[in-house]
Structure formats: C-alpha cells, structure tokens
Amino acid sequence: MKPIRTERLILRNWEERDRELFHRINSDERVMEFFPFRRDRAAADAKMDEVCAWIEEDGYGFAAAEIATTGECIGFVGLSGTEDIDVLAPGTIEIGWRLAPEFWGKGYVTEASEVWLAFGFETLGVDEIVSFAVAGNRRSIAVMKRLGMQPDAGADFDHPSVPDTHPHLKRHVLYRLSREDWQARKRAAR
Image (tube, rainbow, N blue to C red; front, side, top):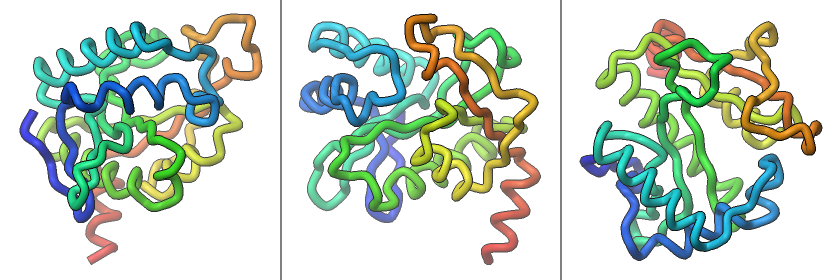
C-alpha cells in the first residue's frame, strides 16, 4: 500500500518494528475490553502477518497509524471486508480502529478515518461503509457519530465470532455511511 498522510499521521503497512505495539493492542485489557479474546505474542505476530498480506494484496486494510513527527506507531485505522460476518451483505466494507490507550482522546482515529472514508468512496468507489461495535462501547460509537455515520438499529446483530461464554459482548450495533451522505457532509463543511 502506498502510505497515506493526514495532518498528523502516516497510515501505512505494518513493519517489523511494529510487532511489540501490535501485540500490546491485541492483549491490553483496556484496549480489548469489548473483545472475548487476548492474543499472546505468537498469535499477535501471526495476525500481523495476515493483516500485512491483506494490505499488500488489496492495497488497503487495517493499516498502521504512525505519528508523522515522531515515527511512533500508535495502533491501526483502516478499511476491511466483512466476509467472516455472515449477517452482513457480501462485499460490505467496514471501517475500524484500535489504538494504544495513551493515544485515546486526541482525535487520531477521527482524523485517520476521514481519510479512509475518502479512500473508500473515491478510490474504491464503494456506495456505503459500515462500522460496528459492542453496544456498550461508547468510545467507538462516539467516533462513528463524529464521522457522520447513522445507526441502523434494525441491522444490529449478535456477532457470530463471539462465543456464548461472553453474552455481554455478542450484541453489536451497526452504523452506516452512504457515499451520498458523505459527499453532502463534505459540501456542508466547506
């Protein structure tokens, strides 16, 4: 993938130097509060390799987010297909993120997501981008709202990958943003 620059970030594929951070954001209790699993180092390394391959193949994905002035990787923000979630229509593209806690509340996810929305609508030509989170995940839902995404309560779902041993994490809320609504929002912001 060609790196994408925002005001404060560089969005790029993962590099060997990012392995420790990738493991940390996949094992930290605060970051993973709304996930039923934690990855040990071997599982995190394998997942990072998988994500890197997807980015290389597709030209986009859950890309590393790096602070441009320091070169520090802070987590990921990006677009991904949802083929593993059978309750969503084939070809659905989601926007998602995961940052180390010390970078929360600084606007990095919103800043990077705005660029990814533009990429999805303008470069990929998709008609809609979705996002979803556990119903109690107020922080992620707040980002979805800041991005102009709208809830679709009729499409909320029990995530098929969440085991029954974690019933409080099963229910996910779904938010949508159409290309037309995104374009109208951009025009209104000018």
